[in-house]
Image 1: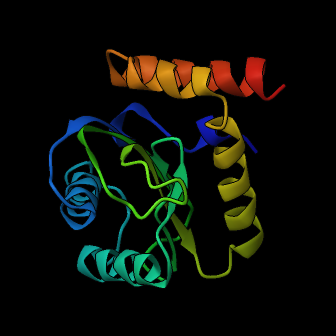
Image 2: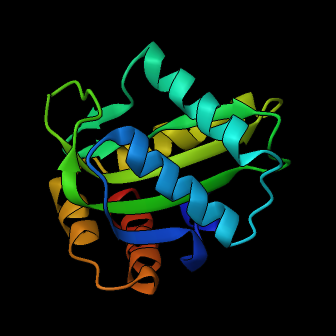
Amino acid sequence: MEISEFVSEDLVLLDVQGKTKEEILKRVIENLVQKRVELKNPGRFYEEVLERERLGGTGIGGGVAIPHARTENVNRMIVTFSRIKEPVDFESEDRLPVRLIFLIAVPIRGLKSYLTTLAKISRMVRPEKAREMLLNAASPGEVISLIRQIETEIMG
């Protein structure tokens, strides 16, 4: 399973604006609705993501966050990529503000794929070079190409 199998150009947002993680997450989820992604109850999913955030920030360090929720609001896993215009606090372990977000929605029954996806994204963005490439991407298509390149070259 590769991350590039789940992220499409429609699910890439560049230069998202917002001052708080709540504003950013709301905009990312609104994009899912605009793109007609199968999300049964977007408002409830937003609350589920915020509930997970309250358990502990999803910032993993290096300016990256992976907000996520297991939910009954999707029938299949959804992964989005967003680049934030101005860094936002996601309560990261290293205390660095976040500019790169991978939002994951996983069906309740998808525990194994959920954990695998979290681990793969975390590994994928660990190298500074990978993060820099994603920060400098000019278009959603370039983001998708870079994710594939990172999966192939950096992760093997």
